[in-house]
Amino acid sequence: MSMTNNVVPLYMLKFDLAQPITLPWKFKHLGPTRYQMFMAKLKGR
Image (cartoon, rainbow, N blue to C red; front, top):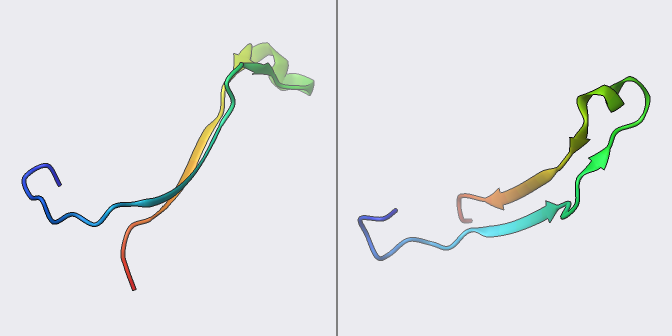
């Protein structure tokens, strides 16, 4: 994508937690956790 100038832009949906949260139950021993998730449409039509 960096070698051409006719790249189609990605249509993307992104979710992000700005501050870390502590998971409940047994997972609290993992410590504060941040989540980041995205979905993108890679191919047209």
